[in-house]
Image (cartoon, rainbow, N blue to C red; front, side, top):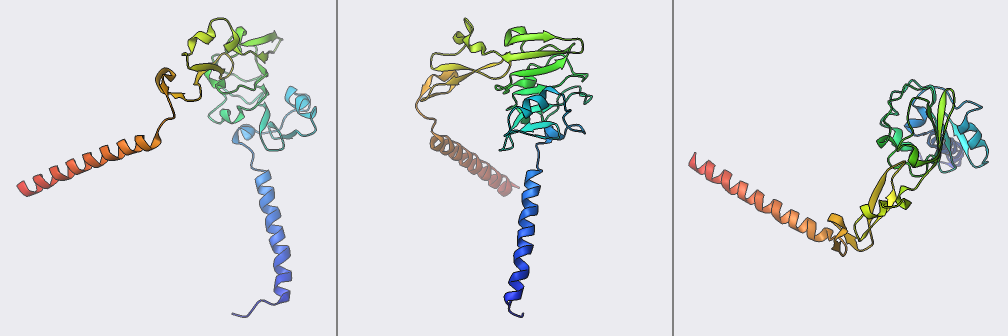
Length: 229
């Protein structure tokens, strides 16, 4: 094979640069699937568009408003003929504003928004209740064709809700009207009653020894059957 001279490298440099630009463009276009759930882009006068254009660092792509790191902060799926938001909807758990109006959605959306702790504005069809009920939001406003759930409330601050967690655990929000208990540092297990870090070495040691014992027992049983036959 002939050696590569200076002219060869002058050819390779622009080719490599073109390849890197193409790969960069491909990564830039790799949107979350939820942003392309239905065709078209965000409408000019939608609430998501207005919110996105308030901050220069945010940008609109397909049905999403993204920050510079590609995190979803706004999602507009209005008029997409959706009966439910679909399996990719959790990709938008970082969203601050979501528009789902003009869709034939089912009424019960409580668990759909599990993990959506940043959500502050949710626009829904008029016949669909705000997830978590009116107590999960600061303001619920009804219009002719839609309703707006505004200001997600932290129900952990409500009277009596802190008692749902054990002594060594604390209540944290888990979406509109949803709560969960998290064990304090140094505690784990049932009702956060076990103190100290969870020993992975001990767990896998017990699991490994148990598996080995069962394997040896089965091997011995098979050998006895083979000798008998």
